[in-house]
Amino acid sequence: MEIQGALEGIKVLDLSRMLPGPYCSMILADHGAEVIAIEDGRFKEDGLFFNDLNRNKHHMSLNLKTPEGKEIFYKLAEDADIILEGFRPGVVKRLGVDYQTVKKYNPRIIYCSITGYGQTGPVSDRAGHDVNFLSMSGVLGLIGEKAGPPSIPGVQVADIAGGSMNSAVGILLALYARERTGKGQYIDISMTDGMIGFLSLPHYFSKLTGNQPRVADTLLSHRYGCYNTYETKDGRYLSIGAVENRFWKRLCGYFNRTNYISLQYDEGKREEIIGFLREKFLTKNLVDWEKELSDLDVCYAGVQTLEGVLEDPLFRERGMVLEYPDSNGTPIRSFGIPVKLSETPGSIRTVPDEFGQSTRVILREAGYSKVQIDRFFADGVV
Image 1 (tube, rainbow, N blue to C red):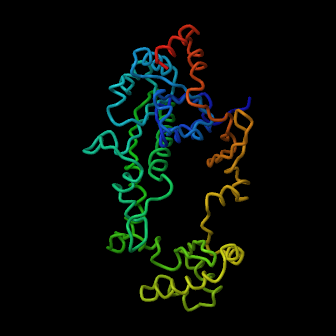
Image 2: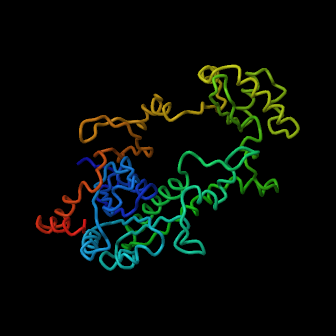
Image 3: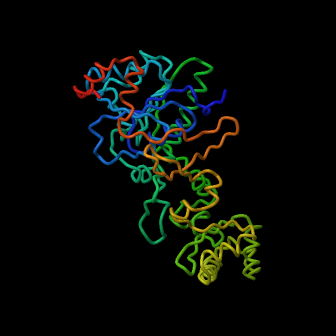
């Protein structure tokens, strides 16, 4: 019998909204988990329903502030494996769907909470978004130009790397532990905590040199010519990552500057070398540089646009850019699954649900009659 992903047979109830939690549950769903995303219908029109994240999931509306809504949730939780939520600390307790309450119905439940600053500590109740978590963790202070303010990344690093991915790791660890102990457990994910680990190399180099890391002025951030970005003739940019001397040697040889080989990290010559490379890379368009450097093995890459990524043959071959029809047959272009398992690969099995699309189906499968379901809708329970 064909297995539909490594997590086939695992049931997830996802109470989270926006990006961190839904991205995590999408990872689980892509690898076979049955995911039911649950949101209050009052959020339907707020513009924060990122539907692409709902592939492979079912979506239902449920008002947890009603007694009937709570009872429906408890019924669903009885045979669930994982609950995921992203409210501020204390909210799920006030709603009556916190870990301590739910585990009375299902002692094997694995319950994961994603917050900005964690369940404990002096700022646990503070509101925040990606930029705030990057700021407090010290990561944002290392992003930007040397003479300018910190630059906010155009992607949500803390939300996804600090929140979604650490949650997925925690959930998988807890599932493995449950296989051995039979016990569920609670997972406390702080997106700010998750970003602290990104400081590992800056912290290492700080201890090594005795200098505090500064924006755009470290070994791996613009200080030297071998690890830098350069504008090209057509206004595009190229990155060079020739950290090891063997790569740097090839680049220097290409430019007939063998005298720079031993000066790779020379403090007195670094600005001269950067200036030389800036002048050289401005002489050709990005596409020409990519052809010139393709056979040199010097650690380079053109700085891609989103449009370029979507059209890049590498990502199409790797299955990272996909097209599939939506429920109306209209082609959807989406991103693929980065974790590629040989025996139990992930897959995109269903298109994203619309808001609350599966509510009736889920309630019917939970044992509720049509009359009961109609009343739930009429009473605002769902």
